[in-house]
Image 1 (cartoon, rainbow, N blue to C red):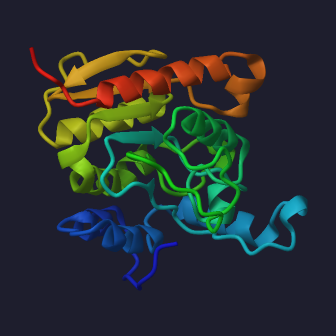
Image 2: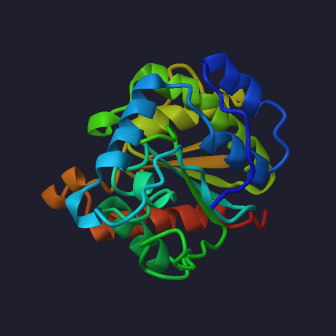
Image 3: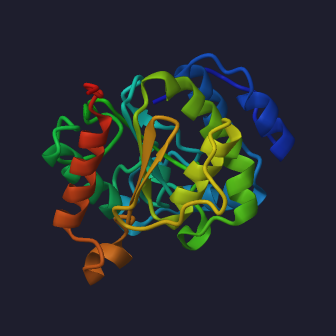
Amino acid sequence: MPGGAATPAAHPEDVRVAARGVRSLTELDSRITACRACPRLVTWREQVAATRRRSFATETYWGRPVPGFGDEHPAILIVGLAPAAHGGNRTGRVFTGDRSGDWLVAALHRAGLASAPQSRDATDGLVLDRTRMLAAVRCAPPDNRPTPGERDTCAPWLDAELGLVWSGLRVLVALGGFAWSAALGALSRRGVDVGRPAPRFAHRGVVHLDGRALVGSYHPSQQNTFTGRLTEAMLDDVLALAVREARPSTGT
């Protein structure tokens, strides 16, 4: 869990200022977790934390923005949508304590990128190898649907995190169309030519940009996994592709 106090960002401009010039992931995490720039999200995440789901009634919810998690020098960066109300918003760690996290971390373990097949809570000792994961929007949104404005307000946090891991990064895996658009936006703001029109999201779609690969995958949401739109084999295939793309080029 991140530590250290930070002055809360209360407006979109505050986020841009706070994200500018961050020198470490620890500093970035501290600033992210203090953010209060999106009133609708602040109200929702804190309401959920106060009322709690019956099955978690004895737990203390995190109820704040959720920072990234994983290797500080990743070759693979996984970009999701937003924390789940009773997942990351409860546990304080992205893709932890909810069914989407169960699916993703199990697949990462099968791919040799996670030390365990489960992500139950922030103290379970999980370690990611060469991999980091984050959400495009850092607060749990009502109905799992952040607005475009909330995405744009949160974008400087994504830009800052991308900048801090950029040197060793080889692959971005976007879980769903929202994350795909957010990743393309961050790359474009970094000066990467993403093309016009921008590449469209597709499951197992791959775009090579500035020596790095952007890989698309359906999000491991219950809506996709329960209906069979995304299967374990399909997610395994995407991560295997990401691992291949992350290998250093041997040249010709």
